[in-house]
Image (cartoon, rainbow over all chains, first blue to last red; front, side, top):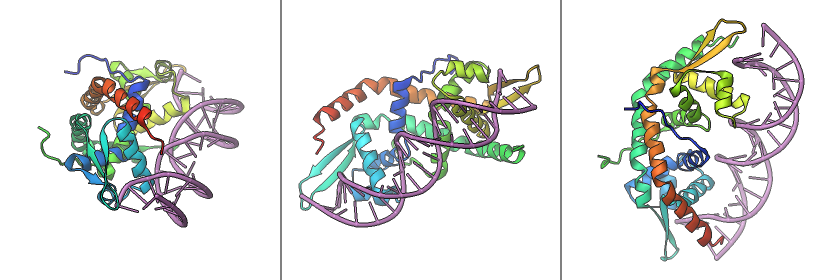
Length: 122
Length: 122
DNA sequence: CAGCATCCTGAGCGATACTG
DNA sequence: CAGTATCGCTCAGGATGCTG
């Protein structure tokens, strides 16, 4: 199953993961997987994100082809962000990751407690 | 399969992912999945990491129960880092992630090029 | 509404020196 | 060998204010 040992974590992979798995990207992709959103809809959906960070996250995801930015020429202009087909392919790996996190969170918290209490701090 | 939309990216999940998917953790886990390693073996296996960052990474992974630190009382002492059963459970999500990255890297690079050339820069 | 520009703080990291 | 300790810097990110 995982008997072979060929993980590959070279620089391009690392850079890509940094760009699509960073602090706010998952939350944004999550929202946009549900439905297209406008900028301030995203801000409301992810209250902890600042405007600056959200802008940066959206640009980065757009640059990597994960989402699409569409200018709707109403008045005033509305901006519509939506997930791309390429972005949708991230769904499965993310789900696997989050499933793993959920499943093992209790064991990990136990490990942390054990480490923290028995940490000699010398 | 992933038809429902319930990704969960709350703060504890985010924190956990930050700790186990950070810059050097994947490379370290990669090495330790192959075989137990001593400190300087890891340094040689991951040339770009500094001693300080490697120490921090190892402590963090140990605290989260992913790896185990064993003091071998030879002379001078040797430290043996090895993956735990809990750490091994990360293998599958990481593999899925890296497989995704490899598969879509070309499309992503095309998206980046397109974005960069056509970027109006205002 | 959807940003951009600016200032600012602090976590993270490299470099260096020292230790059991 | 396997670290700890300290210094200095960079730079991501928050807060705030302004704009088409």
